Length: 117
Image (tube, rainbow, N blue to C red; front, side, top):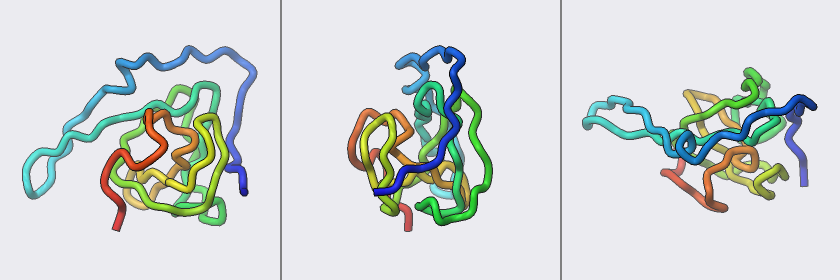
């Protein structure tokens, strides 16, 4: 079992409210309008964004404290332990950008959207 490297700070971070977890944004596609739900990253963590579903993939960037991310699709990958349990699910937050679901408050231990192809 591997642990994703994240940066945790000692300063206080205000926890995201459930209203933020339910925040939505509209994204257009060729079939019409899709609603993409956004989810908060665990309070007190700056989460690594990788180019694929595992810590062996290239680090693209680090999300700031209090980040809220869209989940476009999810795919299995490396098992990671985080504040929301141990999971092999990785969330696609943008084209070619993945974060471990163990650090994202989805309210579920399983898939919350479609699987990535």
